[in-house]
Length: 340
Length: 158
Ligand code: FES
Ligand code: FES
Image (tube, rainbow over all chains, first blue to last red; front, side, top):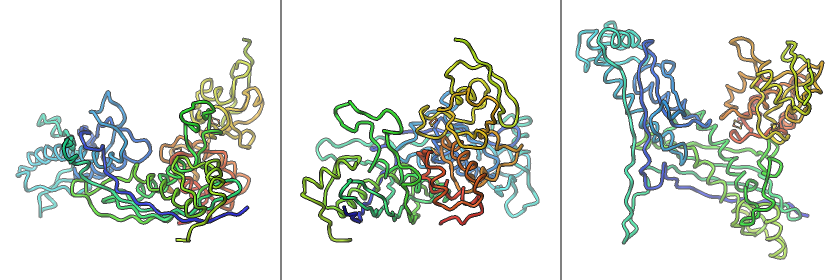
């Protein structure tokens, strides 16, 4: 028995949002009598951090502290329509919708503040700490809370805003196939190092090194968290998970977590990540999105690393020990490739 | 079916319930006691999110017959709360971004507590071993391992 090391590389050019567009998301922002703001979304935060990021986007656009914004998600009874949390579209599509809604609400807030301070709204600015003041005269100021109270109880105004973001559906030219699949792309490159046991067919992850270009990282710690976790979802798809192990024959499918295999804490390996920020012109504050794309480069990188290690090309996922072993047998033994 | 009276300590308080024969501890805790902190993931011992401590030892509540805890002490994630203050493990999980969807978190925290209670300064390998019965879909485990290291005063890897 020999354990062979191999290294594989893959890169991704990842279109943000639904292919060809046509996938709207909406947001509503309103102020409460407490001076706090609510963002109503039907978009779902599955743990990827959309609630935190939309909160930051709303606070930044309104010019208020992030603590003053509450985001209400995942309810189509109370939130406006969203196409969904997929295709790395949350930050880009929902973020843009929140930004538009917050901009409209900010307009009303500044008008209401102008009325209270008896100046023109164009002369006002927010300090990001919960106050609105006359440009160049910070002492002529009013808190956003007092503005919210005055707007509602005195002026009879609603400080609110509506936002939608839609990349219009691109038509495909039937003659040439010409189309516009996406308006912005994230990029990634990942190197995977594996060890393949030529007696058992088992593949062990040794290390990963990656670089991700995802527009501006609005919340760097959340981005890192998504990249760390997402890479392991990629490993899981590459090596373990499948609902149809003997596709198309449905018998002997997995029934539980003992048969539907996912990596455990003992399977992980070091992963060095570099994040490159190239702000997208049409992203909220330049953000694209790391969500789904971070799992993608792992699969081809691992498949390439296995080829590099034992010289077998497996194009059917997941790359189980059984498949590796059968392929090695068919080749008459492991054939390690030149080390890259 | 005849019900059995069952008394045990639940997070430091005495509780008494009536259970059907065959009721598992997870169902007893969630449906009869109303403690929703242990989660149902698989109901058959494969995921670890239902983990609780019985007399200080880590157990899968979905595989434990409720009647077997008679007279014993059961601690769930709910026992970690201290008013508005976070338990050091909870704080470490938050600071190290060790939860995303959060579904595995109750089990991870209880497995971590069981470990730190018997071994206050575990090695990384001991932490991996301690949470090896728990599956996480989201985090890739690294942040969870780091959080437990941080809570035990250990050095967190980059
Ligand atoms: S619910 Fe008990 S181990 Fe999954
Ligand atoms: S945080 Fe989602 S399963 Fe662990």
